[in-house]
Length: 382
Ligand SMILES: NC(=O)c1ccc[n+]([C@@H]2O[C@H](COP(=O)([O-])OP(=O)(O)OC[C@H]3O[C@@H](n4cnc5c(N)ncnc54)[C@H](OP(=O)(O)O)[C@@H]3O)[C@@H](O)[C@H]2O)c1
Image (cartoon, rainbow, N blue to C red; front, side):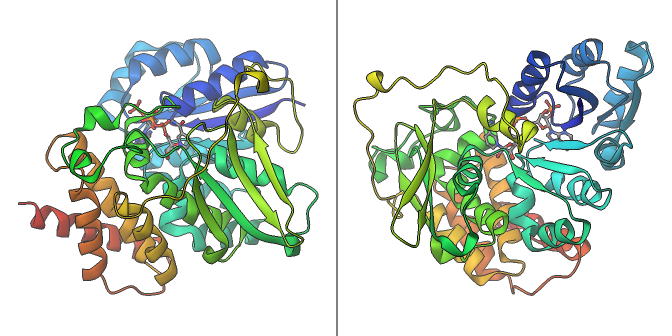
């Protein structure tokens, strides 16, 4: 049976690798929908190759330009409504969500309500609204399958294990490009330094998040919701070689790990083929080439974003949404050279201090919280 897939964020790092997998397995997967923010040249090439039934370009003007450039039967939509239409298109069976940021939340929720399986790369959705999203999954009997390599590793380690046996989740982190830098040197870094990740080639926002260790903080929150575990049972360990993608510790003390070369195609493919496995094109791990695997404790003084993420999820309610929205905005400012590296945790912490967290019931409440965060940061940085 061919699985019909819609990819949100098809022109990004994860999106392109997803299309590579579909290209390698035409007997297993078919693209029915694609969505992007503004990259219509790349999208046009993808339309010509994969012939999706529906595409969306967030930017309305570019969507209209695209309409004039393509022939064939592909329908073109725009705005958030367009993303929702792609995510809920009647033929779609699996929505692979790889957009950046909490803009992925509403299309994910709508896809869940329409009983689509979710392959989730867009971790910000779970950070901002994990409670709501997982409740919708439960109510609609929908599977949420992680694409993030760490969470894919945990899912693989948990196969066949009773959740009652799980004592701890151990998320591995490469430590990012500044792992060995002192505080004073990190203070001076620019976004160009932050984009030089040692092991992974990724989009700009996640590269900066990896350099601040906020990415690991977001992943702690993501793991809490995906695997329904108390945050105190989620530990982060720095593992610079990125060979062990994460581990679980069971109540008898046994530790199970998932290993592989650092290549996102493996977890993406597992999310698409889950619960089956299919032949992969990735380079296999050769233990003769890896003589040492090392582990360190994260340094929370140099990388305070990780503790802010723990604090936000411990407080709960709307606080993780504040953390995420503030981080999205500050990373954007950092990428535009408007703030320095340590302004990111500084203003996130201030926003969290200002916010009065509450237990939310709806997306609308979260959107209001996000709007407040954005307005507050704009005002602070004026
Ligand atoms: N890259 C990785 O290795 C990796 C690993 C694990 C998890 N993730 C997560 O996966 C997500 C994507 O990361 P990435 O590195 O692939 O990012 P990326 O390379 O920056 O790509 C982002 C994609 O999302 C699209 N997009 C952004 N805003 C959109 C909007 N409002 N509407 C529709 N499309 C929109 C972009 O379109 P345009 O091209 O038009 O801008 C692009 O296709 C993030 O949440 C990240 O944390 C990534």
